Image 1 (cartoon, rainbow, N blue to C red):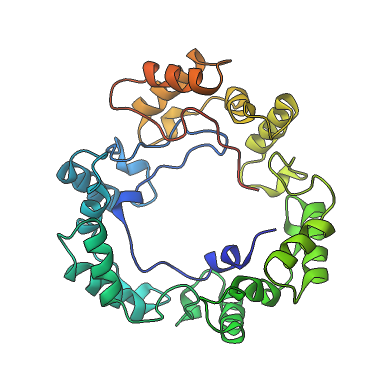
Image 2: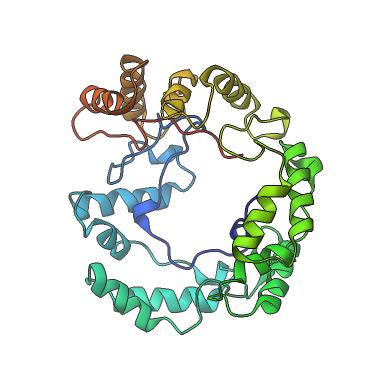
Length: 314
């Protein structure tokens, strides 16, 4: 059962836009064949969601040098174009964050973190009320979030997240790809309302059916997912790979995933190299697999998560 942090995600847009994590091309939910290594330029920005931001990212990568450097991410932040705060649900926080970033340009590591912290007003962080719900994807959910923030008090409090979870509206399980699990989780949440900390965690665990909600959960209704074909492939892989707690489970899932369509990725060359490496390393497990992937990838090309497959978010 996801806590309130998941509930907030649709409502609250981060004020700090980091180029170091921007322009990441979408990959298939079962594997990283199209994913870009940190500091890897994007070959075809036209295939990204925001070509202009992608081009800015490529220029920043060229300026910031070795992506393994401890200063790489700070350098990338320095090169990020300013946000249009008028379009932000939190214009005040956005403008303050932009001003803080400008003031701290050139600083690195702990000095940069301290500089930004000093320039951000106290209380402008987690539990921040959304200023303009009309600019969010779900204004109704945003208003409910604001009411919950008001009710739950200090976001630094140990009980804040549990309180927020108590205040969130019930999920519409009829729209969930895992209706049975969704209904069980909602029932557990209702039963555990008012409990906090370890007591709440134990209550939720006791109220959830055995084996439900853990890793390796089969998706019940693939027609309610963004990619039903990939979802069915994922379910078949789960059946083939056995115990999700096994140390070899993720590698097995990666072996089972269908091949990526590299022609649709922003970096076809890297995608193709990753697919070729995956085929060459099929059946290998643990450190042997990681070493195999590293050896089969061209020098400097290292797709994220190459050693082990990623299962789709459920």
